[in-house]
Length: 216
Image (cartoon, rainbow, N blue to C red; front, side, top):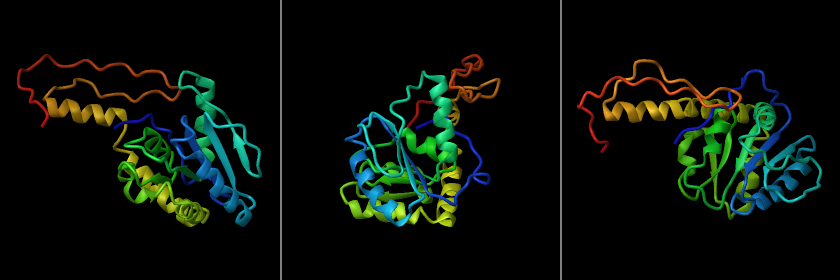
């Protein structure tokens, strides 16, 4: 599993006001309605809290809720806007009804965000202590997790753990592990995908040595 890092500084982030970020194309499977319901209750307790929605969400109007619609990966300007959302959020919430291993968790973690993850499908194992796993069918668990991350110190602490976990899960890290397992020598370092989303160059490979091992 790899991801495009959404690098941002946790030290410079304003943690004083809860800003939740939801990014998911499939509103129903990603459990958007449950997130919205929980946030309505959170907002009563924390009037300064906001919830930013990205994806194929319905038209929504409510206190503290901001809809951004779908942002295609090919839309470079939109991706820069999404980068800013990751950089200014204080928590990422995506308690999907099912998600085996969503890349969005790693992208959020790379930006230093604590993640409210689903307990269904094993996705919560990606980030360890950098995430709070919840039963997606239990509204109170989603609510409790969001309230917990309204506390700046807790959100900052889990965000730092998430960032550490994501640091070894970039596409280049995944590629390096595969190449090492196959026994192929790389003559130049692998490069990350650039900040604007364009592809990195393929590194030259050393001649085939004939000693590659099939991965177990």
